[in-house]
Amino acid sequence: MQAAFILSFLSNLVLALISLAVLPERVAIHFGFGGIPDGWASSLASTLMVIGTDAFLFIALYFSPRLVDRVPAKWFNLPNRDYWLVPERRQRAVRMISGYLWLFGTALFLFMFVIGLLTLRANLTDPVHLNETAFLSALVVFLAYTIYWTIALVRAFRIPKEDNLATKSVREARRR
Image (cartoon, rainbow, N blue to C red):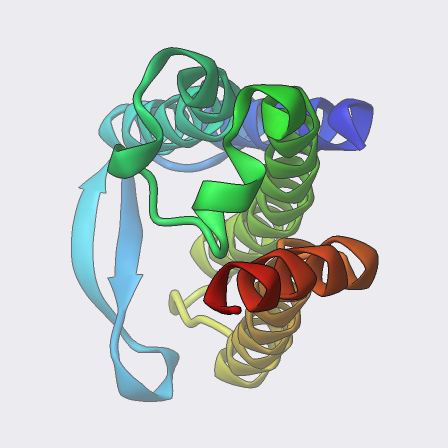
């Protein structure tokens, strides 16, 4: 999954550079209802904004799991963190978090790639016009995936049944 994450990030960088090469000096960077442009910038400023945003997101998603090794567990909002962030399970938790962040990052960069293509195409039409149906379709797919991903993440960090049963037995024995 790490390779797909990196490849999707690099694809966005290539698209940004291609856009810089083929677009006019002034490009639409924001669109209102109906796909009508309502924000403009130079193609260089637009490209730098896209590359900067992509780089920031890549760094945040790629390196965040490494913080789990270095930061106290109390600073993390993770389902069942007291179970997952003990020393004997911490490395497994880091691998799981990395995998989930790379999955989400891949989906995010693919969504951004589609938006980049739609923006490129819009700026190459006369008059400039965004395909709002395609944009909204991509947005719905991305939001649906985000909901699915969130549920999968929460489920992945449940306490395994065998450990949950053992924990309950210990608690019951202490009460007696």
